[in-house]
Image 1 (spheres, rainbow over the protein chains, first blue to last red):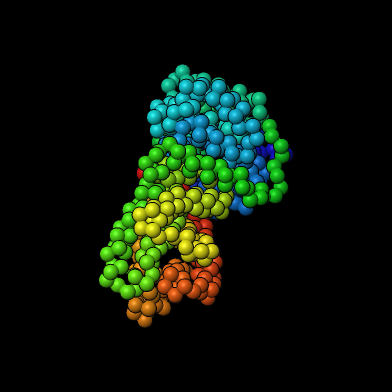
Image 2 (image 1 turned 90 degrees about the vertical axis):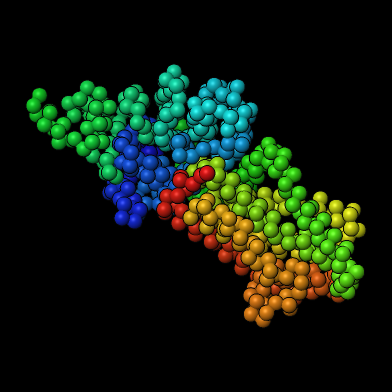
Length: 253
Length: 274
């Protein structure tokens, strides 16, 4: 088994004159939880889209679970899954119907049992027979997370997984994802604007700005390196291009 | 953690196609107006042309000679029309619901998606055609099934042509956005005057007859008239339609896959939606 669940080399994506991702290199260790952080337009969603194979890179290579995603993505798609606010589940289908369809697409054998498991895990009992269109934002997010875990993936790519959840449910989901990762040895790549979530869930954070990786490290390391008190302050420094100021602050201390 | 990665691409899966068909079945099951609509329009068209036939029968020796030629034309035209809409509207459902991102990171392959669209289109077309054809028998005493075994060939040639156009239109709309979805209607109606649904291709100007030759549907409608008017089955027309449709289906699928790849390059798959 490859030591890295994700290996990205010289990855670039240009849309005409716009450089969305610019010569990015990183790897994510198997079983690790890594955050992809950055402001709007930093290149996080573009990077995740290329990892999923939804977007073809302009240059570079992407290896996921030991396979070249540009050539053999169908070998690994059954072992990965994702959740994103940029995609929805069909609104006219019930939550149970949606999950049943995806369970079949992922080739699950005991679909009824798996649906009961994810319904229990995400407390969906009372919404399974309701159309997705009628659900609250938080309920939709829980259904989307249930879909993301329907195939018990080895690799989870999560874009803002708790964005629409109330603090209590969001906290519970984070705990669930942490437990899932520990029990399954699964790898998680998380794009989030919630720094508390990243500090709790991730042992590594990749900071992006304008399509480039500008820093990387454990959340506590980054906080120390920038001489800040919280990861959110580090995020603001990087998003606002104040790395050098940060250096000056550290020098003054 | 599950097993190590498979070192070969997973094969074509009828199970994934079944999952997609189930997805559309869930959609229709939850909306009875959709089911009614599938049968409503073909029936209305059939009734309209049935009465036109009753009117013309006393004024036209051509119609008097071949009573069902207009009703057969409208019902078979609907196979082409519904076949194409069955593909493109089912695909647009995924775009409207912003579901393509989920689908295309699942193991579902684009060509499996196309096969599932064909199955769904076939079912939708039959739901529209069968009630209308039975009502034609009840109201006007004309049986579409009097065309005999060639009807099967006519049906599949028309629906395959509809699928081919549907694939190309779906791919184009995926690439350029839902603003172009009216193409789904425009594309099929653009060929309606040329393929000789209600009149022989011979009435067209010479240059349009040349265009009509390259439409499988024009050979089908000529073949239909040969049976109803002359009582003869024209195998040459059937073979022409089949050969043209092989090319159409290949081009339609290739166009969809090319547009799909282009959509992956431009990043629109995550951006489409209502």
